[in-house]
Length: 112
Ligand code: FES
Image (cartoon, rainbow, N blue to C red):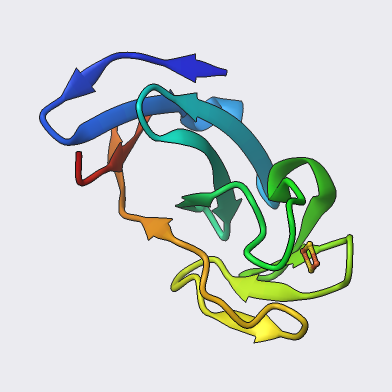
């Protein structure tokens, strides 16, 4: 999924209907890179897609356990609400981005 529409520092990344509950969707944001969009308990979250421990794609090689994304490469995990590591070998926080909902659209707030 790719997005080029921007409103200030907010970037439309997908539709709410594109992300099912407990699913991770990969989006490409021009100028930023690849992000992972998560939906848990009806809420949306966004982070960098690449695990800080290695080069695993969290949207492709990760899965959700509640508000934790578990990286299947070495079973480390992060809290998707804060990006803080919750299980080693992940030690470095994942960059997260505020998510804004506008109707069915999911927007991510970026510092560009
Ligand atoms: S690459 Fe993700 S836990 Fe090692």
